[in-house]
Length: 428
Image 1: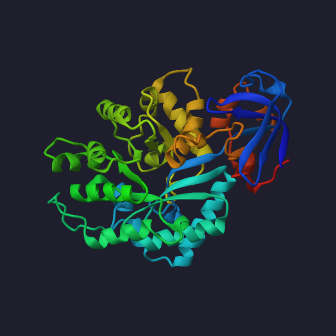
Image 2: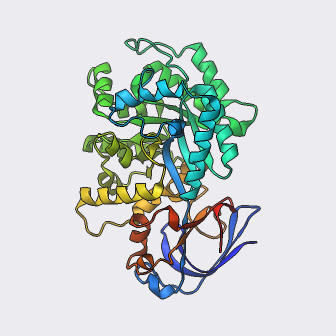
């Protein structure tokens, strides 16, 4: 049974900064077996007093990726959202079609290994290319070893040519594709859910069909981009006679578990989210994912993180397309924290909220149900990252939480542990 001694840990859901005499876990069960504290002090502002060089934090979970375009880094430079990413003629879809299967597998495998090296043990991927795309990412996942891909598959081809009639049924071919994605004989290889680019890509009737089908397949996850650009809202309003934004249609027709972006979210939109969150079943953990670095790279508005946090919205961080960003949650936290500070003007804004958005704490209830908490606690999942704080500029910190959120890069990650197994680096 592996053990660590004299380390600082961020404990439980509240991320209390505690000095730990002994920390142990079971590699077989993948659970934390023992945490022995040295005392009852909070060491966030007196880290130097601990006389330790090691800090243990919950592992990172990347709430939104498109790793299929890992083979096209910075390929969208100078392109708009529509030019770069909309199908069928967007740069991403045209270029992906030119790559061999092995090129796609290799590039995804490489980026998964990179994610492990930056402390990420799980990512939620909007996966293009239908059934072939699913098989490719599962092959890459097997080769990378250690990172969990939550695959939210997309139709290979758009089911509709003309969307003027919102009552059009989802074609039988598309239903069959969904059933195949969700019902592979090897259940671990099946898709974990469904994603589509926008609510404007399918008819109202099709969205309802997908919602009901997902429930028949053991409540497969439903995910969607919403309010990423003004066109998402304006097209939806035009189709509904000015009644509903794409976000409102998503709640009514599709009932998504995961909503991504919200860059255009207004106070009215936030009120809609609050109302929806209040009406959710107590066992449900609907999550909203923001990707500020990707939005900035595309020249879009930035998500109102401060306003969303202030209203108690369940938030996660994602890095979006690898074509735009390296999937580095350390960099995403740093950017998100500074953005949130700028939006709030509040000098006492707590960096802890940003760390929760980036780790197992905010994400695990959506994937595993509310009975499985993320974070570091006895009998909890042994999913954590060991940080090296031996560098003097880190050891002198006067606020450990802020330093973790804003001053780290991958060279300070000693080890990434997932389900009790060391998947990157070495433990001391």
